[in-house]
Image (tube, rainbow, N blue to C red):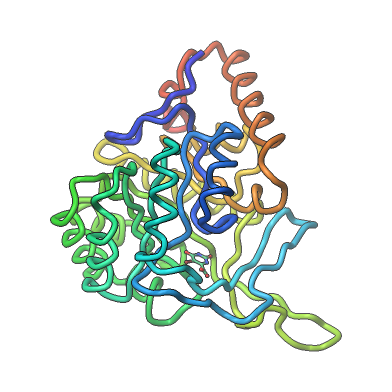
Length: 307
Ligand code: RRO
């Protein structure tokens, strides 16, 4: 049985990818996840300069619903410092996608061009962080900006460019179409949903930044719908990477059937460290494929669209 999957020009040993932002961006944690059996890892989103992010608490786990809410606020070391970490990942042959963000084309370009000489797999443009006003969401909800940023980045690198979309919009097609027109190599859906939690005794929002983004099992059906819709409309022309609430191998299968060529796992890894979980995911995928008499992952992709 073959678990390999292709996302455009990128081939991975299996469809499991560590989602951006989970367990930070250090060599040791990303390497650990790859070693546990993942197909690839994505770094925390990297920008032009070091950012501390929002006040604590900035991540709060909602264990009873296997979910989390965060307002991290794009904390990262800046691309110049991060480059050293990235070099080690590449040297150790960890298949790595670099997530980048910027408030405008100039910032995106500086980060992309500053890192592009290293031999990692590709870029993920984070056009969808819910936790700042200027960067992130502001660019990811404007089709014109999505088009321009994607197009300008396309000109500047020969590496694959994945575009990570926000669910915090009314029309995903408009934004997805803009990314495709701009030259995206894959669409990634979805980032976190705008959300909030309040402590009823202190009568205060729990997160330091008050508002945050919801991830984990609570958003899985939303992610599935976005992937299903995107595959139905654009599945013939661009690969889709699914993300949102994956907590088992069976959740991976569900995303593949919706139309994803690979998936990103985040909150599940944040809640429980990867070693045992990865094996379980892989075993569950293999068990399902055995039962269904399937030989390869490609037989599953978009399988829920067959009438
Ligand atoms: O850093 C964050 O607050 C963050 C980012 Br960049 C993102 O893309 N999604 C998210 O939920 N949090």
